[in-house]
Image (cartoon, rainbow, N blue to C red):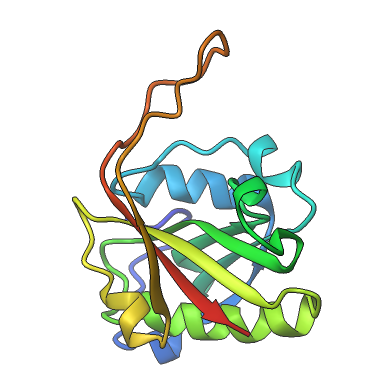
Amino acid sequence: MPLFRKGTVAPPYSPLELVVRECKVHRACDLNALWHSRFPRIHWSNVVRNKDYICYIAEKNAICYAVAIWSSPIAGNRMKGANKILELRRMAIAPDAPRNTASRMLKLMRKDIKRRLPHIRKLVSYQDTEVHSGTIYKASGWVAGAKSKGVSWQAGSRARSKDQSTAQKIRWEYQL
């Protein structure tokens, strides 16, 4: 159920009815916690401490149906040209959002990022292979890049939260 539903407004029939716009990081993290199937936890401070970040919502009649959180790459130290890359950290869609909301949102966000952050040359996102097939990326013209084995982010003496997933990941890339 979308956050902040008002009255008995029917959900949109088509993703073309949704307006995609920037939103505050706190709201994006709250919506992600409601809808994300695999990674509901992301603290706003883990977003804003990055060089670049931007959050979006897709809404109709002030009712949110989707959210996306972008930032500088988490593993930027392992990527060539990381200062020109933006990573889709989370994207979550409400259960009553119209079909193809994710693909449409990816297209609109890509255009907006290109305009707002002209130094960004590439977008990346990671698909959790245990729960997603990569359809939204394929449909939006992204290219499958590296595959990685699922590994834990637990490291020696540094305390971390419990792993949300250790499934194999596929990195999807889009050149701007």
